[in-house]
Image (cartoon, rainbow, N blue to C red; front, side, top):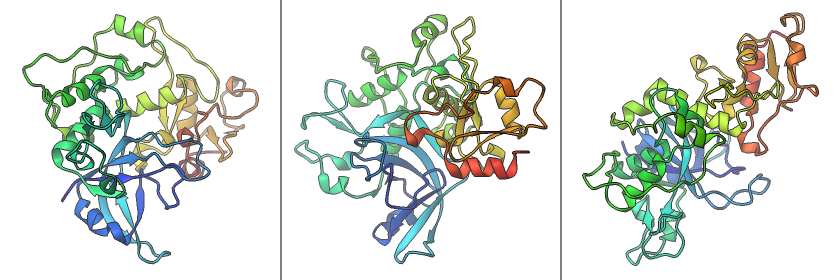
Length: 353
């Protein structure tokens, strides 16, 4: 078994749904077969397909998943699917750039940059475009661990205040890897860490930092962390709440408690118990009451993002809580909105309308 990088672009011409399957031509069959039973990271390239809502790809590693098996595409010759193990897809709350400049930025002029994949860097310090051009490529264990450690840095192994904001620990992990102070498993050397640099924060992050100490980076083995339900819940909650700006998508309410913590909850559309992935597109931000109604099938969401109600089953006054136009308050980016596959599952399996 060998870990790997799978490249996925928004609006890809391939039949990809990264949470569940990855579509590829025979050229990469050997890479995919070696990765069966092991972990991969997803990379988003600069080029995106026509029709994408992005002007350009982010050039970041954005998720981790485990490959269950590889099967033939029954409809397209010389093409295959790598199917992911249910429940083992996890987006990074803080996507990781493929290259870091010597001054700590995202990389620019070639020469002194750190590449998260050493194979992408030529001996003269420039980018190996031939290696970069391979959509699927093997990844050494140490580099896999460094990417995942950076992507999950700041996420505790349980829900907490830190899961409402973008913690600075990711910056430290990348700084320390660049300076040779952190190994691939995230273990810190004895030298002191460099000064922190903020890369941006979610709303109310400063208030949360003042109220509670920063999260400590977990020393638990990486694979154990990746499969832990508490960590997955925390990472999922952070992404969903940030995408919806801590606002309930069906009522429009954004309630913040006295400690500065938004009360909105991250709901899975397709339940975890039914192999629903911890993916942003399988999530929606809901208030406690709306979450209760959604899980019990009293409300649902159509493919056009209109809100559906089981009118004869709603508690008295509940319908008045919903937004007037009965349309989901969704993220602007199409890639962050609920996916029709998961919405259809909720309507067919849970909704009582």
